[in-house]
Image 1 (tube, one colour):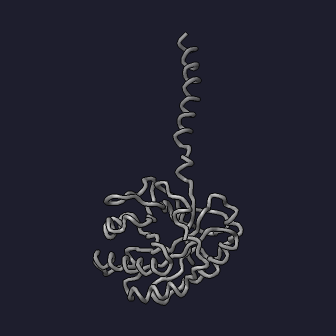
Image 2 (tube, rainbow, N blue to C red):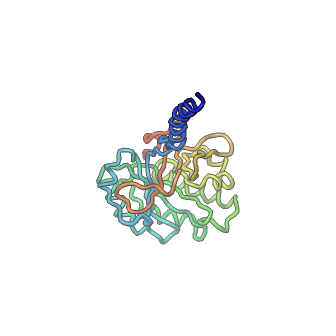
Image 3 (cartoon, rainbow, N blue to C red):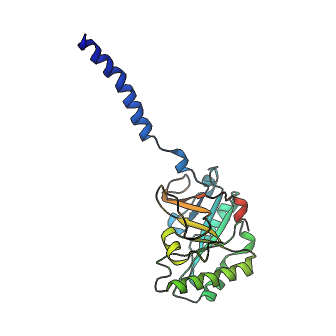
Length: 231
């Protein structure tokens, strides 16, 4: 009697165990959803026609300038190619502590033609770019650049930073701006002080058709929509 019951119990338990294991290992697809990408020369030559077939991509941010002399080598091709395929595009400037803010803005304005922008401009504020500045210098420089953008383009810019650096150097002074924060794990960013962030760059190793290597994947947060960042 015992020898007949044991195989029966095992035969019932094993399928249940296997099902539980499969369920535990199944990825949460909602965690991998995205609304946009951001690109630079690091992505090489992009096939924008192929990228535009991806219906998840609702916006694209493209690196345009850095400091006072650098224009991203693929910027012109990227902004023309992406918009030609009907993608909504914005451009960003990588802020540098090595040159004056007004000179950086003049360079940005020269490269960024307003009529080719669908989305508000973005300031990319990263630790390595503003190395050597104090927290106050970082904040005052971002505020100055943001003010110049607002006067020329008619709207406040989007501010990008890694979440930790934003909280240590920019919060809470810029919490009223639209914020684009990078954090590469399953835990969404949070900001110090009142307010919320609007776009989460949740991975730098995304893969999509039309781009050979990896690309940043970005997701709207906190009820933000494409209409909120339109220029």
